[in-house]
Image (cartoon, rainbow, N blue to C red; front, side):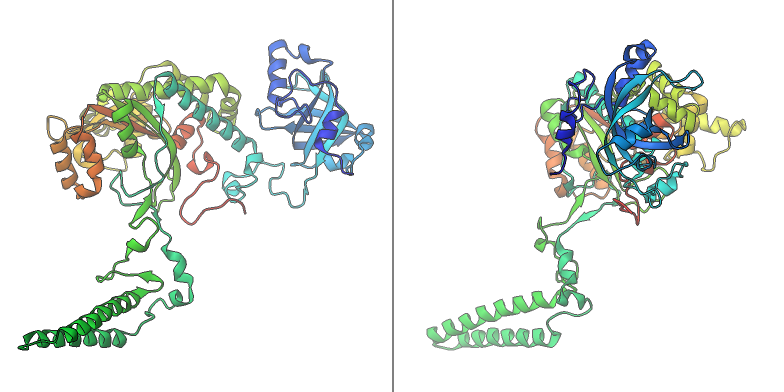
Length: 581
């Protein structure tokens, strides 16, 4: 009879007071908890305690001619590993199919019970270590094929090993930061009376008007059928359709001639009308078959007939939940959505993904100033929460990737943001060029969409902290942003931050029906497609505002990581959709 985890757990002493509540089969104590307790008391409170830990071996080395094994074990709860010392007597005494050497390989999983002891005085950087008294479980790892070796791997390489890269220190720290920021997001909006709304991932609307959307369709499956593979040829010959058209026309002519007779036969007309009805039905069916080419049904003008698709019309993956969540803001006042969005943008830059997450609050009875303050307070709350809960991870990023990481997060958490109008920002950039303080790759003039180099200069060199730029030219912003009295700008704002550039984009929404309709016409949008959105202005319109924050960009900003593909669990970009490799 096989030994189960529950059986193994039953052999342990009574449940340790620090054990994870959902790991009772082993009474496993998270390594984070052990280090926190050790930090609080200098390690003294745990000395002599017997407990069980479980995790994966980061490094393993044998000493004293193979009689002792030193393991660095990490369970993902903290960037700090725990040194576990296993003697050959303990290892060999385990009543399972493994030996001491089986535990040495990087990637091996272990569950070990032992006593917390002080390390030798010669040990550097250690407060405590675990001396094994029992090896409970070992999940072997083949060192010859394991793709994550002990040595440091490049981030580019890890993107090709997406299914095992969470075992690395970097990706583990990113995961903890991502989790903390997600929690901080919900905490902030919940504290301030916002309602969380789930907006649809499948939509007909293009919120941004850029047209770079992923289409959702079930029509393509027929393209692989036998008829579909004949992609240049219909299943019906054109001459067959022409013959049926001629036959139908002949019946129509005969009926017309019969009606001209002095005493047309009612029974004859009835018979011919019946023939005509059938002929038209057959012709319609033939024409539809004739227009089905490559498995796709076509309209008469050659375009694809989406009435046959799952939703009966063209649909796409959403680029933003904003338009949808506005419907709830106009009923519940303050709402937000937090979910994935998609852009079919053929971009390979370090700042773009095809699938990414957005936080999009909408505030009723709020203008642009309210919107800017809410966005600033939210970003600062996230930074404060990270400093409180993930400081060890931020210290890791500061050591390994960005020496200014911790200082930048503290700066944002503790200082109010700068504010400058778009027009003033352009003047600052022009002055930097004229006085030779800065050279830019992209030209600067009023009306441009600020490039990342412009945004970072303002945040990093001028203000040296996040800065809110507001009142942008209408021609570079979306149709739903409120037109200012000057007729040239809209009540829009972007929060620019060091390291990243634009982090937040928002605006006061256009609540005036006539102005919104004209803006949509100017942008080439069909009003009928957005009639439901216009209804929000027809029925109880209200001053309201909102913003969007790219979640992955927030992670880039707080961690100092350079490539956005490294801060999302499963990055999607052109020609890449890996779960494993």
